[in-house]
Length: 177
Image (cartoon, rainbow, N blue to C red):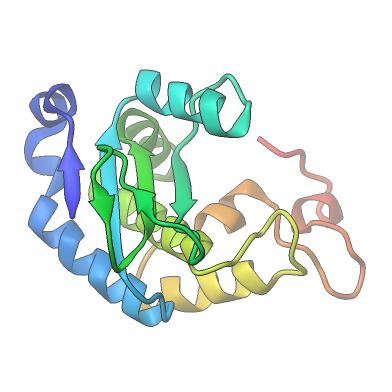
């Protein structure tokens, strides 16, 4: 299920393509072998900042947040409703996605697909901040399968070389943006 906040719907309208995003979300979840449903909130920078501050103790907006459901306890979705068969929730800032899409030179829709894929992989248990490149490899393979532009991990320069332990950006002398 994809929930779009009213101000975001009014501002971005047709660029959001809810039905097509829902189809992509199901395909991405299936490709990531993620059991259960995914609930998505498309919101703005203010709300994603609040969620990031509350759940990650980082007082700044971000592009996507993932909230996996623990298999050991009943959970609630972002709206507070009890859920069963839920893999987790994603929250995406459409405002941040729009800026990132412009910087990357592709459409908002493509950026939202990239964020959905990235979030689904987090819900499936991948974590690019702590793994040895497994999430980056999986995201790259699925991104290519779906015909998407460079993924979030690649654009951030955080791909780690198994040989050197350095990020790709560090090997090329680039700084993280």
